[in-house]
Amino acid sequence: MYNSDAGIAFYEPVNTSHKYMVGASQKINSYLSANLPIVNSKQKQFKDFNQKYKCSINVDINNPYKIAKSILIILSNDKKYNKLKKNSNIAFKNKFNFEKQLEKIRKFL
Figure 1 (cartoon, rainbow, N blue to C red):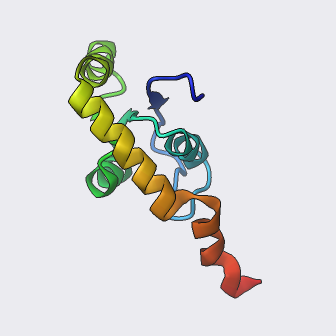
Figure 2: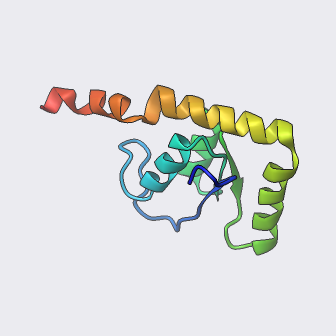
């Protein structure tokens, strides 16, 4: 994964809770740990995720042209690419790494 340039995470509206990092968000967590910019859907939870962490681009996952265009936007603009990578790194270090997730469950142990 560390040789990748971007993470692609497309899901239908199913159980993909970022609040508890379960389900489909495991893939996104892997992308964050590799400091990758992420292309994901325009579903509300992914828009909210992008608004909060600014490490992804939201796209209509049913439109291949828009998907390709979004990937091109990331890969052809060094400033945007580096900003997304930096924000991905920050999101992982400050919120989604194992130690931060463990803090949420310590009270139950």
